[in-house]
Image (cartoon, one colour):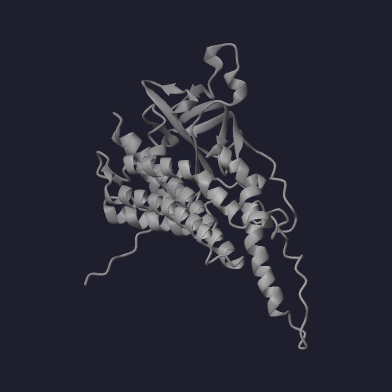
Length: 367
């Protein structure tokens, strides 16, 4: 029997097996953080794939396509952290009286080596950790007959990155496990006469869908990871509070299982029934991804409420790891009773944090 070679997340997918392998990598990576690390190492590869396929669909030179392919290979080879910005202007720019000034970026000058741009873009995620930022066609710059997009290094001359302050949290990592580990520092990028070489200027479709069509696949895996993690917490709470034989609790859990499996089925269908680009690359079916996203958005509130219902009033005074005070036995070791209490504390505390932390509430507003 022929042995299947595992597929990593940095490949150019050309068949169903590639998509399945990439999807498994996304799932395993994001579940570890309950979907709160939204930009895995593979995210930059998907952005670069989107740029490559968008360039290939335009009437551009072979050299331009080759530069997009070379950059994707660079991301795959080095793991360079690339994040995404659609290029829309920030709020101050949108309120300017002259409509011509209501754009994010302006072209200062062109030369044989590249272009110089100026302006501000906002709401790109993980800028504190990124090495490059892709700025999409919503930035408003046109070069010749093409709408331009750019890849900007965050340490380039004239580039300033501003991030929001960290979320307010307790100093005890047990009490604030999400905010202390996965705080996503959204921000803005200010460009003051920044030089971009031509090999980092890409002419793509003016529609903002050109690149995000690859990213929704990754996003849905992140949302599913959060739902799966919530289901896991609900199961742990059911066990910790002695509700394994309680019929109403079991019904709540079954409802969550149905929602989780429905989204998983949509991802499976998207990968096994893919679409293809003119260059022969395959990508998950948008119809299946859309169905999964809609199903999860409709059920996410009910899933959260289930996590609130199962422990009931125990969430009101969710304890920390310092609260249970067990006794010591004759050997001086901590008692089994205290360890069991601590396990219950961890389950109840995680549920309370998952429902009420400022980090999670902020993430929900942008989902």
